[in-house]
Image 1: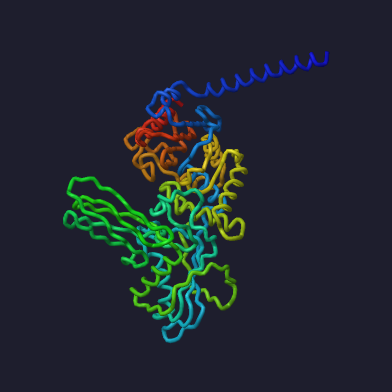
Image 2: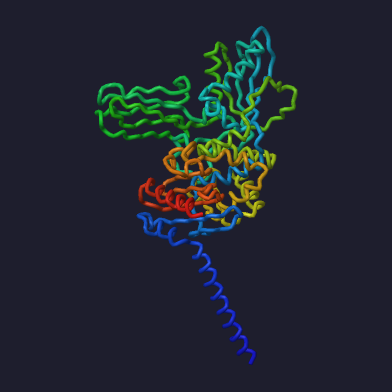
Length: 490
């Protein structure tokens, strides 16, 4: 009799479980509108993997399609990274890159060393200073000039111990490492750790085009110019490759006659690049430097009286820098600020790994499902980084409760107006009604953000397309159709 009842209740519980599963499946299907399904499954990109999650102003899911399936977010990951960085540093935080002297001044000659203490500032460039790339160097020169220093009989030292010595996050593709969007990360950086190359195809067909580069046509890099000028009307064929671990850059592009090309290319050893560029700046400003350039990775005792603080440069606040992460999708700013947040939080050298740990702790605090988050970088360049659109919308919902929400919201790209959304929805009624973030790596296109609907309802959405083999513009069009449908229907 016991075995009979055990079989009976086992069967009953199994039946109830199946009915519950059907009910859950039906509920999930119910939230997938036939129109949403048709937009995806009748498109030429239907064989790609799609995920969509939409929430109303109360955070309730009102539409979904594969919401709990893991996707590659590309730069939509920056929405999470920037939120964690903002939460840790606050909108008013400013980087201070200090300059110290270790020596004595006599008759306009500094006898001793000049030391720069790197603090991870990503903005020692023209990016935040109206494209004046020497703006920060001008400040340092004024500090030395105010002391009357016209000659340095000593070394210029760059201390970058604030960060670890790992230049890249895990998972970045080596094909990308020659370019501005995949530069080395270091605590002391200049010009986004790039040289800005200009190519002028103004010679004869078959000849090598003329090149110039910033800063100073510096010999810190060596260009092997194998480029060729081709007949007018032919297609531009780009080829740049830095030999990894060196500052030798091979140029192999084919450029039609009359063509002009500008490209920012990565450098090796950011700290040494900073020092080399500053030394050339001083020499061009009439200050002689007789010592060597030295990179120091040691964590020094800065309270020791032998290190005399001469001055410092203070960056713009995080409230402004955050725009580079979300509006402009700047990978360099993202990874630098992630390491900064880790260094500040844990009180040790900033690293990508500690930054990711900090992000996950933040995600846990705001009730995101951290078992559905896999990160190997902060910017989404890594193809092994995974998350769900459900988690992304949960992040955006919970950020509304953050005391720093206004800073976060202002950092997002506005549809048809600025950032990576500047050329999307610009001829649409949706222009100005989305604050969000786009994302792209090969085979991945994502878009997430806040949408004010036609009825002025405040929606949160996240749309991801992975593994597509159609043109990116086509995927963009389908995603934009989904957003326009959401705008009109809710």
